Image (tube, rainbow, N blue to C red; front, side, top):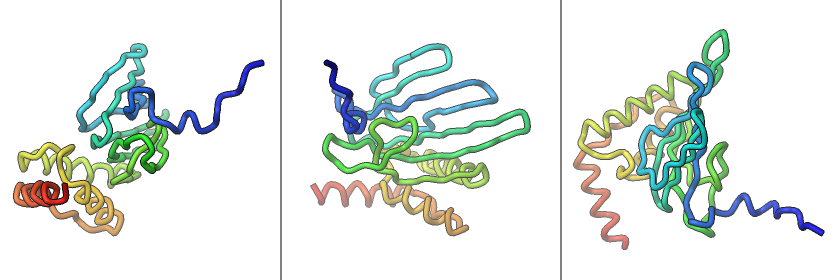
Amino acid sequence: MTVPPSPMRHRQPSEDGMTRVELTWIEKRIEHWIRFGRVAVDEIVDRRRRIVRFRPGAIFAFVRWAANDYGTVSSRIDIVRAVNAGEPFTTLPFVRPGGDILLKIEGWPKVSQVLAAIDATEAADVDPCDAAPDHWRHVANRIAAGHQPRPYTLERHRAWLKRREIER
């Protein structure tokens, strides 16, 4: 007699404790990619699919775009913090087990605003995966309210690093 898999099993981090993200690239149809983040493991499944893994605490941006014969059907960006085992998380398609969602934006005009905010962070000589998690929440809230997010500056980043150092 075989025991059916536990429904909670898929909700637990993988054996290595990392967060897995399934990427697909079918040109002009389905495009899932990582905009930023430090990939710990990159596994090629086939010519159209890959699985990347992130260590707990890593912050990454996951972009999903889909189209049909008439144009874009959906576009979305999520900025996520990979969680530790036992830590609460939110489920997200193609992300196992899920993560702490810092930003969730849908619709190409708003997604392009987030991509511009990421570009601005990089222009300030800050790696977006090192930026304060609160900045990405700020970007999400400002865009959702129809306002321009404040840029992430090197000064704000230094203040974040000092605050993090004190909290440890």
